[in-house]
Length: 475
Image 1 (cartoon, rainbow, N blue to C red):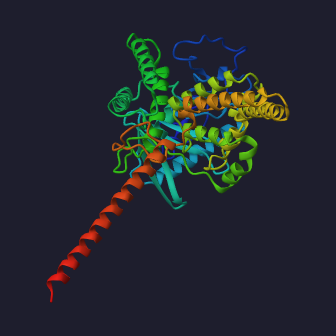
Image 2 (image 1 turned 180 degrees about the vertical axis):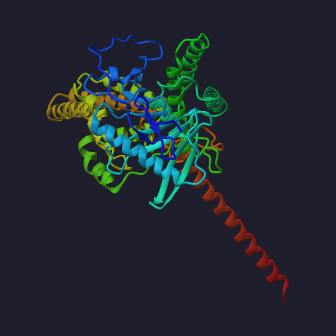
Image 3 (image 1 turned 180 degrees about the horizontal axis):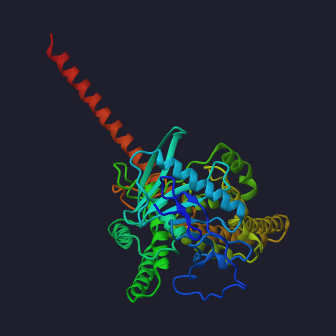
């Protein structure tokens, strides 16, 4: 154990993180240091050059994330924190959190000190429930944290390359000087497996990326990998790219229960049933909005199933919206805001119901205009004494009816109902759902019932004939 000196801090207390005897403050720099952004982000520099009002222990570095955020890294003890340790109050809380973590780990049997390829993360110092601390093991792909059922019962919880692991790399990649072990293998394996699923199966698989997205992700990976092989400092960007993709994939795997007996190859396509409140609102607004709001709500629910938005369905929905809105001569300038100003507070898609009402207003206004014109023309033709008025009314109603029927048939894919059954390998046709499926299901049920009824009648008729034959033989 090193002795205490005036220039270096002492690591003591039986654990790898206890901080004592900070070094004395040095003279602050007279001006800020000018930096130039490089491929790997903003170069690391001692935090003492970032703030002339405070002096921090030697070894601390400040990193600027690719998304613009800033975090701090202690190179001696391998500790990362997003908190502003330039503030004395924050630094005091940080020191207390390290001491608390050290005391907890010392009381856990079998806990080993952090190796050279591990990092301790400390965040949430202002959280009322206490700070969050965990260890990132980049060599073994582990996310390690201390969990407890009660203050006297603490144990180590370890996760292997789960969503938490990738999120941690995504949040703190700039201090990495080596690529975590085999993360590129996991990246290519996950994309290859997901792409092969989409090729061999339907597009309704649980893989979260489309073919175009997968192609672009691999292209970015190859560009970064090529720069990495040339010796360019792109390790932070390389790890950030992989971790963002793997985090999305792990979320999809968790929802589909990947690797378990209950694994679902196909994603959810059946929306949750709406509550009684929305049903009552639909009934009340049916006459006012002509039921158009219900159609919009079903389409929105089809694009966001159980809180998950699939990009291909969402793009198709927006393309349909743009086609409809471009055909309507009058539009409200703020209509597009309705798509983002409402957020769900429950699992019943109440926000989609309200959004659907706003989206249906232009179409309903157009229908009101057509209805007003038809009523005015009908009144004029009926009250007129001209012999051609009735002919004019019949022609106009015929043309309007034909145009309406043609529009309904042309946009049948828009007006059809939502899916009623999840996708399965036994399903005959991928697009066979909605009102068409309901009609076919009803016809098949009626046909099956008729077949069973005819068979039952034949059975009764044969039984009656047998009884008659037996009665004729007996004396």
